[in-house]
Structure formats: C-alpha cells, structure tokens
Amino acid sequence: MEFLQNNLLSVILWLPLLGALPIFLLGKRFEYTAKCIALFTMLIDFGLSVLLLFSFDFQNPGFQFVEKRLWIDSLNSYYFLGVDGISILFIPLTTLTTLLCITISWNSIKEKVREFYLALLFTNIAIVGTLCALDLLLFYVFWEAMLIPMYLIIGIWGGPRRIYSTLKFFLYTFFGSVFMLIAIIYLFLKFGTFDYTKLLGVPLGGLTEKLLFLGFALAFAIKIPMWPVHTWLPDAHTEAPTAGSVILAGILIKLGAYGFLRFGLPMFPHAAQEFAPLLLLLSVIAIIYGGLACLAQDDLKRLIAYSSVSHMGFVTLGIFAFNPIAMKGAILQMINHGIVTGALFMCVGIVYDRTHSRAISYYGGLASVMPVYATFFMIFTLASIGLPGTNGFIGEFLILLGTFFTNKLLVVFAALGLIIGAGYMLWLYQRVFFERVNPNIERLAPLRVNEFLSLLPMLVLVFLIGLYPKLFLDYMTTSIEHLLNNLRF
Image (cartoon, helix red, strand yellow):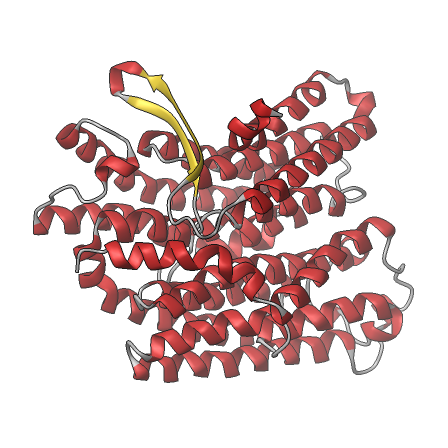
C-alpha cells in the first residue's frame, strides 16, 4: 500500500503494459482470452484512477502525487509526473473511455483481435503519460507516441479510405509537433532544463516569447483541431472503427486544449494575451462553421465529427477569455464533450455493425425498431444540444457567461452556434428515428448486453454532471484561480 501511495500515477500509467505483455505472448487461438485480459486490466486501471480522484486534495493548487526520478542524465531530463486540478479529471476519463472501447468492440472486431486490443492499451499509456508529464521532453515523447497506435487503429481496422485518412491524420499532427519540438529544444539550450516547473516565469524577450508560443500553439491547434487546421478530423472519424472514433473524440482532441492550459498560458503569458483576440475569433468561426457544415452532411459519423469542431470552438473560447468562470466551463466542457460525443460515436457504431451503412438516408423509423437504443440516442442528442439538466448545458453556459465579461459581441455569435447545433442534431434525430420505417432496418437486432453496458456509464455521467456540476467544478477551481493569478499580465 505504501508503494501504491507513493507511485500511484506510475501504476496507473504502466498497468496497461502489464496487461499487454500476456496478450502479446498469446497465440491467435486465444483471442477471447486476450479480450478478457484487456478488459480486466482496464477495469483495475479505471478503479485506480477513481482512487486517484478521491485521494486528490482540490484545495491544493499545486501538483500532487508527484514522482521525479532522473531519466536521461546527459540531458538533465527527468521522469517527472504530477497532476493538479486542471489535469486530474482527465485521468479517469481516459481509463473509462479505453475500458468502454474494449466493451463496445467486443463483437465488432473480427480480424487481428489481439493486435487491436494491444493498440488500445498502448493508446491509453500514451494519453495518460501526456496528461501527467511535467518534463517537456517526457511530455513530447508521450505526445508523439499517441500517433503510433492511433495510426494503426485507423489504418488497419478502418473503412475503405483508411489509408488516406490515417496518413492525413499522422502528417497533420506530426507537422505541428515538429514546431513544438523546436520550441522545446530552444528552451533547453537557453535554460538547461526540461523541467516545466523551473521554466515557469523565466525571462523571455517579446519576439522570442511570441515565436515559442506559436510553436506550441500550432501543435495544440491542430490536435484540437481549430479552424482552419481541422480538415483531418472528419476524415479520421469517418474511416476509424468505432473505438478509434471514441478515443479521438473522447480524449485525443482534448489534449490540444489541455496543452494550451498547461503550457501555452503559464509559460508564455504575454504572447498568449497578445494572440488571444485572434484565437477567440478563430474559436467563434469554428463554432459557426462546424455547425453549418453539419447541416450539409448525409453521413452520420461526418456530422458528429464536424460537431466536434463546433463544440471544441466553445472550449478554446473559454480558455482565451482569461476569465475563471469561462475557464472552468472550458475544462468541464472538455469532459462533457468526451462523454457525449464518445457516446454518440458508440451509438453510430452499434447500427453500423448491423447495417454497414453510415448514410442518414439509409435509416428512418429506427425508434420503432430499437426503442431502447433510440432512448439512449435521444438523451445524448439533448446533452449535445445543451439541454438544462444534462452535462452539455452547464459547460457551455459557464463559457458564455465568463466570455461575456471579455467580449459581448463574441458571445452573441457563439450563441448563434448553439441554435445551429440544436437544428442539426434534432434534424438528424428526426430523419433517423422518426418518419416511416425504412425497409432497410425493419429487422435490426436489439441492443446487445455489451452495447448496453458501454452506453450506461455515459448516460449516468450526463445526468450526474448536469444535475450536480459542483462535484466536478470543485476539483479545478483552486488550480484555475492559481493559474490566472500567476499570469504575468
């Protein structure tokens, strides 16, 4: 128990590797065993991440569960892990999402089953490492490591255009990461350390700070993705298997916004303030553009993918409003988007496994054929719209309320995006679930047990956050106030 208390982050980070080892050694005949090992591993990992959450002191603005050991002596680089109120909620979100990706894929992945579950486990390791790393070199290693299993998940188990989509995803994100690497190298050569805590507040010239901020910002903007560097996302979502889409929407694109909060604002505060008007404008463009693009889609996954562009626009709007209310709303909305959009992609995957069609016109009257499934989809649709009582409402409300103190005109245009969002989601639901029953779907099988159990935790979180957001907001309040107080404006 003492070892667990002192190394809880490392245990959560590397436990999936222990599960991956026996899966790797198993033969092809033991695919079911591989599924069970992956499931059992992530159940334990999720339980430990919940323990981490309950052990967290949200009154403490500093980093907790810190582990620091020398990693690369010649580079003065450390295996340096820690979490604060900005990152703590994303750890259980990551482990839960990976767990649900295992259950939702239980019957749908037929080929290279062991390799698929290995890729899921390694994706979890890379994402948790990115969220915990406080050494810039270690952060960059985990940041880039995410690309490898996601490249394989889309490229091997994806749709007909999977090669094009996965190459586009890889090249876009790798291109932005190169500029971040250059910025990290410059900081090391100038200050002799990769230690994030030591680089906070170091003196930087005006032009130097702007260039370094842009290096980080490009990598983060592509990962979010912000308009106009968003075009990889719809293609990646469309061709990815269900689990790949859930990970992309549920966790991966949140890391860009997390990067702005962890590195962009505290390390380069003056540059962040100077570029804030541009980033706020791009955020509003993303909100409206993403919504209008959704109205033009006839593919279920592309519509939800473009909705992610719009919803993440709200997140960046809240971050660069430099207001504690808006920033809390941004972090909560990142959690909310991961839950709701991840659940919607699961829902699309459920019917795609039965029909092998994502065309909206292929469906119609689905509520009569699969009523329980229709109920799940309706709740997640209302949460995506931001209906009061669901988790989508409180995040967007806090963002708009906080941004109102910064720029009232931007709030007006952002609110227009909410109206567009309600329009495309309700229109989607009408076409798919109401009207006359399409002969294509008259005999679809009802929800399987693994599908029901995959959607149920998301449903619980929709109402838990929506009805009692204080439970989650308390974790981030002190850290956000500390961040804003320490920005050198």
